[in-house]
Image (cartoon, rainbow, N blue to C red; front, side, top):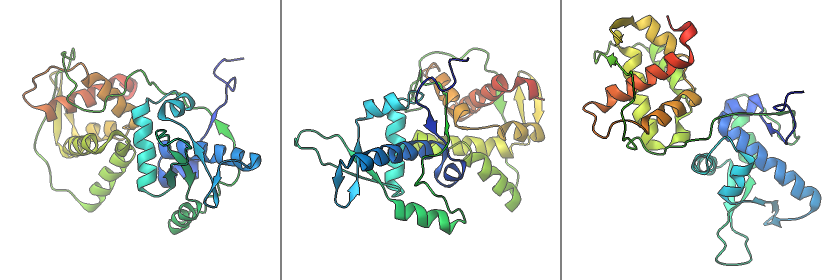
Length: 265
């Protein structure tokens, strides 16, 4: 039997929930729900009419070993911002700042019904493991000190006039990257770069001209894992870059090329 299959406690992924609040957020909130149900059965950690669970970010990271603590902080902060979870402090010692969490079930149900998805999370569903690389977790794009080898992509700056259907298509590409998880600065940077690449009539890769149809075909494959791979590579970028937009775009396209080289052209 494979050692990757159910030898350890797996995590829940509910597709309907992920479609509403995001993949990463759905994983975290389902885990919070899991602990709330355990506490409810044990009749403990009941405050202000709700059951709560608590953990430090370091302890949460043990449950999500594929993420670093700063990524978990960003995901939890987003859940709080969207009011899907509520945080508080019920620690007996004033110096203990460990946060307690519960789920705003009423708000989650209202959101799900508003978009036509009646998601029920009162039951702990079928569990599914998730494997991701957590060896690096950059928070800023300016962590650059070494050159990335064999990056020879050039992105043209001409942008064609957009149409409503193209804007929708572009937004779908951006949405599937889940850029909110990486922070506002990174989100804005990559939104701009992806938009420029999407509308570019062509780009040059190692001396070859790549037409717009192929560019968009590659961009359709973008996701949060690809973005994380780009950020990992940017940690080793040169300190001084003349055109950071072109440089990051080049790293992005090369990351796609490395991951999907079998379907590149």
